[in-house]
Length: 289
Image 1: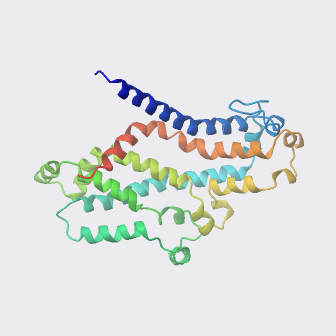
Image 2: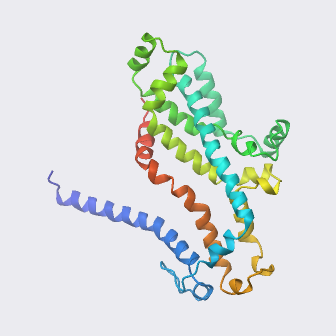
Image 3: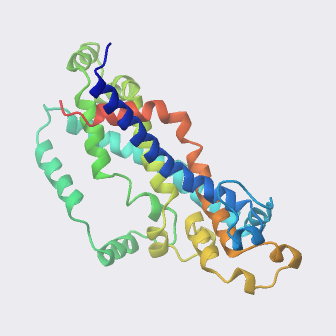
Protein backbone atom coordinates (compact mmCIF):
# COMPACT_ATOMS: atom_id res chain seq x y z
CA UNK A 1 0.00 0.00 0.00
CA UNK A 2 1.35 3.42 -0.98
CA UNK A 3 0.68 6.29 1.38
CA UNK A 4 0.63 9.95 0.45
CA UNK A 5 2.91 12.43 2.19
CA UNK A 6 0.01 13.73 4.30
CA UNK A 7 -0.89 10.18 5.37
CA UNK A 8 2.72 9.38 6.33
CA UNK A 9 2.89 12.60 8.34
CA UNK A 10 -0.35 11.70 10.07
CA UNK A 11 0.88 8.20 10.89
CA UNK A 12 4.12 9.61 12.30
CA UNK A 13 2.22 12.08 14.49
CA UNK A 14 -0.07 9.32 15.76
CA UNK A 15 2.92 7.08 16.51
CA UNK A 16 4.68 9.91 18.34
CA UNK A 17 1.55 10.68 20.36
CA UNK A 18 1.10 7.00 21.28
CA UNK A 19 4.75 6.75 22.35
CA UNK A 20 4.38 9.88 24.49
CA UNK A 21 1.22 8.52 26.14
CA UNK A 22 2.90 5.16 26.72
CA UNK A 23 5.98 6.75 28.29
CA UNK A 24 3.80 8.96 30.50
CA UNK A 25 2.30 5.76 31.91
CA UNK A 26 5.45 3.66 32.18
CA UNK A 27 8.00 6.18 33.46
CA UNK A 28 6.20 6.94 36.76
CA UNK A 29 6.10 3.20 37.48
CA UNK A 30 9.83 2.90 36.74
CA UNK A 31 10.51 5.88 39.02
CA UNK A 32 8.51 4.30 41.84
CA UNK A 33 10.40 1.00 41.49
CA UNK A 34 13.76 2.85 41.40
CA UNK A 35 12.96 4.74 44.61
CA UNK A 36 11.82 1.58 46.35
CA UNK A 37 15.31 0.08 45.85
CA UNK A 38 17.26 3.27 46.68
CA UNK A 39 18.89 4.38 49.92
CA UNK A 40 17.40 7.08 52.10
CA UNK A 41 20.29 9.47 51.32
CA UNK A 42 19.76 9.16 47.56
CA UNK A 43 16.00 9.68 47.90
CA UNK A 44 16.27 12.64 50.27
CA UNK A 45 18.84 14.37 48.04
CA UNK A 46 16.77 13.83 44.90
CA UNK A 47 19.34 11.67 43.08
CA UNK A 48 16.90 8.96 42.03
CA UNK A 49 15.31 9.21 38.60
CA UNK A 50 14.74 5.93 36.73
CA UNK A 51 17.48 3.77 38.24
CA UNK A 52 18.14 2.84 41.90
CA UNK A 53 20.90 4.81 43.64
CA UNK A 54 22.53 3.26 46.69
CA UNK A 55 20.90 -0.12 46.07
CA UNK A 56 19.05 -1.56 49.07
CA UNK A 57 16.24 -3.99 49.71
CA UNK A 58 15.71 -2.62 53.21
CA UNK A 59 12.44 -0.92 52.25
CA UNK A 60 10.93 -4.27 51.26
CA UNK A 61 12.46 -5.98 54.27
CA UNK A 62 10.85 -3.39 56.56
CA UNK A 63 7.42 -4.16 55.07
CA UNK A 64 7.67 -7.91 54.68
CA UNK A 65 8.98 -8.49 58.21
CA UNK A 66 5.56 -7.42 59.43
CA UNK A 67 3.43 -10.60 59.87
CA UNK A 68 0.24 -8.56 59.48
CA UNK A 69 1.25 -7.93 55.87
CA UNK A 70 1.15 -11.65 55.09
CA UNK A 71 -2.18 -12.00 56.88
CA UNK A 72 -3.60 -9.10 54.87
CA UNK A 73 -2.13 -10.63 51.69
CA UNK A 74 -3.97 -13.87 52.44
CA UNK A 75 -7.24 -11.98 52.93
CA UNK A 76 -6.83 -10.11 49.65
CA UNK A 77 -6.03 -13.37 47.88
CA UNK A 78 -9.23 -14.93 49.26
CA UNK A 79 -11.28 -11.94 48.16
CA UNK A 80 -9.67 -11.87 44.71
CA UNK A 81 -9.71 -15.54 43.63
CA UNK A 82 -13.04 -16.88 44.98
CA UNK A 83 -14.56 -13.40 44.62
CA UNK A 84 -13.70 -13.24 40.92
CA UNK A 85 -15.16 -16.72 40.36
CA UNK A 86 -18.37 -15.56 42.04
CA UNK A 87 -18.37 -12.43 39.86
CA UNK A 88 -17.99 -14.44 36.65
CA UNK A 89 -20.60 -17.04 37.60
CA UNK A 90 -23.17 -14.44 38.66
CA UNK A 91 -22.59 -12.13 35.69
CA UNK A 92 -22.70 -14.92 33.08
CA UNK A 93 -25.78 -16.48 34.69
CA UNK A 94 -27.70 -13.22 34.43
CA UNK A 95 -26.29 -12.01 31.10
CA UNK A 96 -27.20 -15.24 29.29
CA UNK A 97 -31.02 -15.12 29.76
CA UNK A 98 -31.00 -11.36 29.15
CA UNK A 99 -29.31 -11.99 25.80
CA UNK A 100 -32.09 -14.34 24.62
CA UNK A 101 -34.85 -12.47 22.81
CA UNK A 102 -37.49 -15.13 23.46
CA UNK A 103 -37.50 -14.55 27.24
CA UNK A 104 -40.35 -12.39 28.50
CA UNK A 105 -39.67 -9.57 30.93
CA UNK A 106 -36.03 -9.14 30.00
CA UNK A 107 -36.56 -5.51 28.96
CA UNK A 108 -38.00 -4.67 32.38
CA UNK A 109 -35.08 -6.39 34.12
CA UNK A 110 -32.62 -4.55 31.90
CA UNK A 111 -34.32 -1.26 32.80
CA UNK A 112 -34.04 -2.02 36.51
CA UNK A 113 -30.36 -2.90 36.09
CA UNK A 114 -29.80 0.29 34.11
CA UNK A 115 -31.25 2.29 37.01
CA UNK A 116 -28.65 0.79 39.35
CA UNK A 117 -25.97 1.85 36.87
CA UNK A 118 -27.06 5.48 37.19
CA UNK A 119 -28.27 5.70 40.78
CA UNK A 120 -26.38 4.10 43.68
CA UNK A 121 -27.76 3.30 47.12
CA UNK A 122 -26.35 5.53 49.90
CA UNK A 123 -23.84 4.18 52.37
CA UNK A 124 -26.12 3.87 55.41
CA UNK A 125 -28.78 1.67 53.72
CA UNK A 126 -26.00 -0.47 52.32
CA UNK A 127 -24.45 -0.83 55.77
CA UNK A 128 -27.82 -1.74 57.34
CA UNK A 129 -28.41 -4.33 54.61
CA UNK A 130 -25.01 -5.92 55.16
CA UNK A 131 -25.66 -5.95 58.91
CA UNK A 132 -29.09 -7.59 58.55
CA UNK A 133 -27.61 -10.24 56.27
CA UNK A 134 -25.05 -11.07 58.95
CA UNK A 135 -22.10 -10.27 56.70
CA UNK A 136 -20.41 -7.69 58.92
CA UNK A 137 -16.84 -8.65 59.83
CA UNK A 138 -16.74 -11.41 57.23
CA UNK A 139 -14.93 -11.52 53.90
CA UNK A 140 -18.28 -12.28 52.27
CA UNK A 141 -19.12 -8.60 52.77
CA UNK A 142 -16.36 -7.79 50.26
CA UNK A 143 -17.51 -10.35 47.67
CA UNK A 144 -21.29 -10.82 47.61
CA UNK A 145 -22.59 -7.19 47.43
CA UNK A 146 -20.40 -6.54 44.38
CA UNK A 147 -21.02 -9.90 42.72
CA UNK A 148 -22.45 -8.28 39.57
CA UNK A 149 -21.30 -5.04 37.98
CA UNK A 150 -24.05 -3.51 35.82
CA UNK A 151 -21.55 -2.24 33.24
CA UNK A 152 -19.81 -5.60 32.93
CA UNK A 153 -23.19 -7.29 32.69
CA UNK A 154 -24.13 -5.21 29.64
CA UNK A 155 -20.77 -5.93 27.98
CA UNK A 156 -21.13 -9.67 28.52
CA UNK A 157 -24.76 -9.64 27.38
CA UNK A 158 -23.70 -7.88 24.19
CA UNK A 159 -21.04 -10.56 23.61
CA UNK A 160 -23.59 -13.36 24.11
CA UNK A 161 -25.99 -11.69 21.67
CA UNK A 162 -23.33 -11.80 18.96
CA UNK A 163 -23.11 -15.60 19.12
CA UNK A 164 -24.90 -17.26 16.16
CA UNK A 165 -28.48 -18.22 16.99
CA UNK A 166 -28.04 -21.32 14.82
CA UNK A 167 -25.71 -22.78 17.46
CA UNK A 168 -28.44 -22.55 20.08
CA UNK A 169 -30.96 -24.10 17.71
CA UNK A 170 -28.57 -26.96 16.94
CA UNK A 171 -27.99 -27.55 20.62
CA UNK A 172 -31.71 -27.66 21.32
CA UNK A 173 -32.25 -30.12 18.46
CA UNK A 174 -29.63 -32.36 20.13
CA UNK A 175 -31.58 -32.22 23.37
CA UNK A 176 -29.62 -29.61 25.31
CA UNK A 177 -31.38 -27.65 28.02
CA UNK A 178 -30.55 -24.06 28.84
CA UNK A 179 -27.89 -24.95 31.40
CA UNK A 180 -26.11 -27.29 28.99
CA UNK A 181 -26.32 -24.65 26.25
CA UNK A 182 -24.71 -22.15 28.60
CA UNK A 183 -22.04 -24.52 29.92
CA UNK A 184 -21.11 -26.49 26.77
CA UNK A 185 -21.69 -23.95 23.98
CA UNK A 186 -21.92 -20.35 25.19
CA UNK A 187 -19.13 -20.26 27.79
CA UNK A 188 -16.49 -22.11 25.69
CA UNK A 189 -17.11 -19.61 22.87
CA UNK A 190 -16.96 -16.68 25.30
CA UNK A 191 -13.40 -17.06 26.57
CA UNK A 192 -12.37 -13.53 25.46
CA UNK A 193 -15.33 -11.97 27.27
CA UNK A 194 -14.81 -14.12 30.36
CA UNK A 195 -11.08 -13.32 30.43
CA UNK A 196 -11.82 -9.62 30.10
CA UNK A 197 -14.39 -9.67 32.85
CA UNK A 198 -12.04 -11.79 34.95
CA UNK A 199 -9.28 -9.16 34.77
CA UNK A 200 -11.65 -6.29 35.52
CA UNK A 201 -13.23 -8.07 38.46
CA UNK A 202 -9.89 -9.35 39.80
CA UNK A 203 -8.36 -5.86 39.78
CA UNK A 204 -11.42 -4.44 41.54
CA UNK A 205 -11.36 -7.19 44.17
CA UNK A 206 -7.62 -6.84 44.74
CA UNK A 207 -7.98 -3.08 45.24
CA UNK A 208 -10.95 -3.39 47.60
CA UNK A 209 -10.59 -0.64 50.17
CA UNK A 210 -13.76 1.34 50.97
CA UNK A 211 -15.94 -1.70 51.60
CA UNK A 212 -13.29 -3.14 53.91
CA UNK A 213 -13.13 0.10 55.90
CA UNK A 214 -16.92 0.17 56.26
CA UNK A 215 -17.67 -3.49 56.93
CA UNK A 216 -14.52 -5.03 58.49
CA UNK A 217 -13.46 -4.28 62.05
CA UNK A 218 -11.53 -7.46 62.85
CA UNK A 219 -7.79 -6.99 62.41
CA UNK A 220 -7.40 -10.55 61.19
CA UNK A 221 -9.71 -9.87 58.21
CA UNK A 222 -8.23 -6.59 56.99
CA UNK A 223 -7.23 -6.81 53.28
CA UNK A 224 -3.86 -5.76 51.93
CA UNK A 225 -4.86 -2.32 50.66
CA UNK A 226 -6.12 -1.23 54.08
CA UNK A 227 -3.01 -2.55 55.84
CA UNK A 228 -0.67 -0.86 53.38
CA UNK A 229 -2.54 2.40 53.78
CA UNK A 230 -1.98 2.15 57.53
CA UNK A 231 1.75 1.65 56.94
CA UNK A 232 1.95 4.64 54.61
CA UNK A 233 0.32 7.00 57.08
CA UNK A 234 1.75 5.51 60.27
CA UNK A 235 4.68 7.05 62.13
CA UNK A 236 6.82 4.01 61.41
CA UNK A 237 10.05 5.71 62.38
CA UNK A 238 8.68 6.76 65.74
CA UNK A 239 8.17 3.16 66.82
CA UNK A 240 10.81 0.98 68.35
CA UNK A 241 12.44 -1.52 66.05
CA UNK A 242 14.74 -4.37 67.05
CA UNK A 243 17.00 -3.53 64.12
CA UNK A 244 17.86 0.09 64.68
CA UNK A 245 20.56 0.10 62.01
CA UNK A 246 17.96 -0.75 59.40
CA UNK A 247 15.80 2.27 60.21
CA UNK A 248 18.75 4.60 59.71
CA UNK A 249 19.02 3.33 56.11
CA UNK A 250 15.36 3.92 55.27
CA UNK A 251 13.22 6.90 54.43
CA UNK A 252 9.44 7.30 54.52
CA UNK A 253 9.37 7.89 50.76
CA UNK A 254 11.32 4.71 50.05
CA UNK A 255 9.00 2.64 52.21
CA UNK A 256 5.94 4.22 50.56
CA UNK A 257 7.28 3.36 47.12
CA UNK A 258 7.91 -0.22 48.24
CA UNK A 259 4.35 -0.35 49.55
CA UNK A 260 3.03 0.76 46.14
CA UNK A 261 5.07 -1.93 44.38
CA UNK A 262 3.95 -4.66 46.79
CA UNK A 263 0.31 -3.69 46.27
CA UNK A 264 0.55 -3.41 42.49
CA UNK A 265 2.87 -6.13 41.19
CA UNK A 266 0.83 -9.24 42.13
CA UNK A 267 -2.22 -8.20 40.10
CA UNK A 268 -0.04 -6.92 37.22
CA UNK A 269 1.48 -10.39 36.87
CA UNK A 270 -1.94 -11.76 35.88
CA UNK A 271 -2.43 -9.42 32.95
CA UNK A 272 0.17 -10.86 30.48
CA UNK A 273 -1.50 -14.29 30.63
CA UNK A 274 -4.91 -12.87 29.66
CA UNK A 275 -3.87 -9.91 27.50
CA UNK A 276 -4.63 -11.60 24.16
CA UNK A 277 -8.21 -12.29 25.30
CA UNK A 278 -8.61 -8.88 26.92
CA UNK A 279 -8.42 -6.77 23.75
CA UNK A 280 -10.65 -9.13 21.76
CA UNK A 281 -13.21 -9.33 24.54
CA UNK A 282 -13.49 -5.58 25.00
CA UNK A 283 -13.77 -5.02 21.24
CA UNK A 284 -16.38 -7.68 20.50
CA UNK A 285 -18.34 -7.10 23.68
CA UNK A 286 -18.66 -3.39 23.05
CA UNK A 287 -20.14 -3.82 19.54
CA UNK A 288 -23.91 -3.63 19.43
CA UNK A 289 -25.40 -6.22 17.10
